[in-house]
Image (cartoon, rainbow, N blue to C red; front, side, top):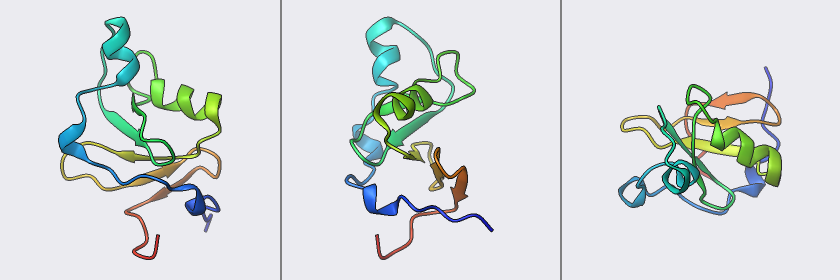
Length: 93
């Protein structure tokens, strides 16, 4: 089973109450389907089902590997580099 080797890059904890939407879509007038938060810097971008895929673009531009779903009742984390889905963050992170 694949394992994520980037948990040491987590710098922020998700705060769903503070999220207004995809940061870039809000600036440009775009739309999104679901939201993902970068766990390195806190950037909120739209998912791969959204027209602009800002979360993936942010990961590619910055090298920040981990995002967490911002959707209600979802706690999963995705690593773009290792292509690993985690149900939740390990408690020791």
